[in-house]
Amino acid sequence: MFDFFRKYNKIVMIFLFLLIIPSFVLFGVERYQGSGGEVKVARVDGQNITRPEWDAQHRLETDRIRQQSPNVDPTLLESDVMRYATLERMVRDRVLAAAAAKSNVTISEERLSRIFAQDTGLAAFRTPDGKFDRESFQRVTGRTPEQYEASMRAELATQQMLLGVTGTAFTPPALAAATINAFYDRREIQVARFSPESFASKVTVSDADVEAYYKAHTAQFQAPEQASIEYLVLDLEAAKKNISVNEADLKTYYEQNTARFGTKEERRASHILITAPASAPAADRAKAKAKAEQLLAEVKKAPATFADVARKNSQDPGSAEKGGDLDFVTRGAMVKPFEDALFALKKGDISDVVETEFGYHIIRLADIKPAVVPPFEQVRATIENEVRSQQATQEFAKAAETFTDAVYQQPDSLKPAAEKLRLTIQTASNVSRTPPPGAAGVLANRNFLNALFAADSLDRKQNTEAIEVGSNQLAAGRVTQYTPAHPMPLAEVKDKIRAQLITERAAVMAKAEGEAKLAAWTAKADGATFGAPVTVSRREAQAQPLAVIDAALRADASKLPALVGVDLGTQGYAVVRVTKVVPRTPSALEQTQQENAQVGQSVAAAEEVAYYNLLKERFKAEILVPKPAETLPMAR
Image 1 (spheres, rainbow, N blue to C red):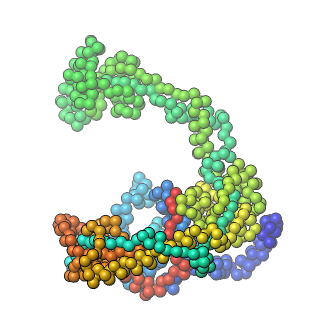
Image 2 (tube, rainbow, N blue to C red):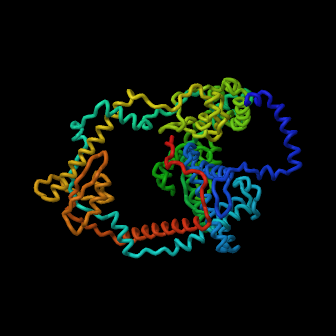
Image 3 (cartoon, rainbow, N blue to C red):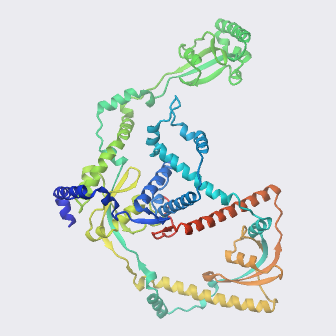
């Protein structure tokens, strides 16, 4: 069926045109727009959030993140977890907006005007005469000023709703102390560990045990589905290859940018400065100029004494001790009058008195390094790359259209698209539906992998559509070989099963031994063997497992020493002897205030969450799509 559409697509388009246009006339576009094509992903106060709205909001958020952090991994932004987080924020915004509307929370025009006036970002859109540049604002933000104002009103209203809860949060001293002490409480303990490794040699696992475990847990030993693929990537670098560069254009570019490819002329100057700021009285400036004229006469008579005169008379502390030497400078490094005078001199010349905003200068040109301009042939490669880069974005747009059409029109091969655009067909094996840790590039993009493992791609081995895998980057691929998920043979996993059974049974034996010792030492403390005392807290674990720390802190501090047993699962068992409570070193007043403030912030955040959950129930907010696993793909 799809082959028919590809082969006769023009005929099909004409047929659909004749079929659809009359129905638009009879029933109106609204019937089509309102038909159930928009999947509902959430609902708040009887109003739906559709998948297109969700997609649009996620695009806005990811674009904003890319602008702020250009090097962020696009795989992270397009992950299921990040997309779901966007939907959660949309639901939250709508819940708070509904609450604000029902409570008649409004933002005054005066407050809004004050906020806009203080917004430095908006100042960039004002013309020199103070008018607001509406077109520039829409072009940069993608929103009209009215839409921006509405969003600001909604944001301020929701902030005001929450402020009524968070702004009145109260943390009694007793609550703050109990919370802080939970982090700082310390106990001196001794630990006796019963490790599974000590009992492993006593464990016997037969082949029958291994086989029985394998049969009972076959789902644990599934080889994941895998595919061998070939794929193409079109990006700006690939688009550059299709740009034809005219030699005459390269030479014109070279001539227009000659200064960029070489080195500027440098001049080594020395000077004598008699300071006279522009703000100084006229009499003082006249006196300084007269002094400079006197020194000029001296060095004109005896040029070889210039350095000595500078050391004795120059009022520039940076150069006076060096005989007035300023080292080599280029145009643009000095103030304009000084620069003009310097670059008008010949080597060895001494200028007349030069007036600048700092005072009066006498300048001597000591040496000249001429400008060096490399020949065209030497920088041709650099010029060609710059010209190609300037044209790459426009060329990419053209190439993207060709790429998209080619992989669709000839779905059984990527070769035609590769030949048209001079791309290299790349291959990969053992590709799975989810990117493995450390995956990079196209093979880490979930949208691309989802397209590869779609039913049509797997069954028909046809090209995927062109998938956007990054900024100015498209990819298309096809599965060449597919192996579905299947149970791994017992022979491949028997060693793993045997090791697992030994660990589990050794842990059981370690626990039994530990529980027996706990009972014996509780009845009679003599003969108990523990490790050296250590002081632990939730902040200082001292290499102890978290379960040991929790058990030690939960022990009854009024009945010390106390013994507690801790089941560590596959790590065995521990008997913990709590000997004493170690008082916390009192904090400085400033630290105590900071800690109390942090507890207050935590209480306010908890009350905000509780209030929001109450509003969610009141406005019947629900997300209609399943929540993904709380894992993010590995960053490249």
